Image (cartoon, rainbow, N blue to C red; front, side):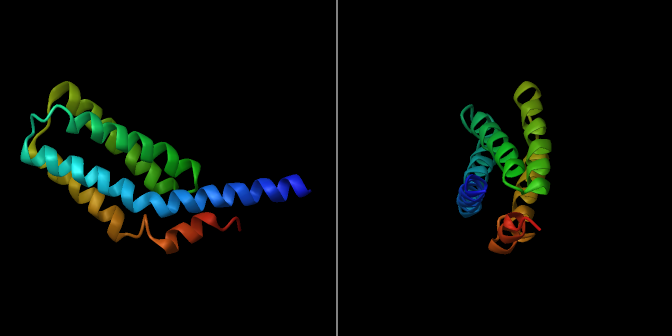
Length: 120
């Protein structure tokens, strides 16, 4: 039983650490989108955006932020297509709007983090 309690405590600490880092993850996504909006031919911003979305999608699901993880995964697939085919400013704007909605909806808020951390 002590091992279970210790493991749960460690998992809880990792979830809290992830939740605390969510705003920074969203900042990285925002920064890449701003760079792409300013210069759609920016060859470093698109892979950086793909990496940030991939990381967010996997980690969010792992730490109990399922909706955010699913949305990030869809966005990741969209960006992967952009690498192959290019993207329009409308597509960039739509993804930037979605990232703003993640913030507004509280996907990265302390309240959402607490709900994700509550095992009940």
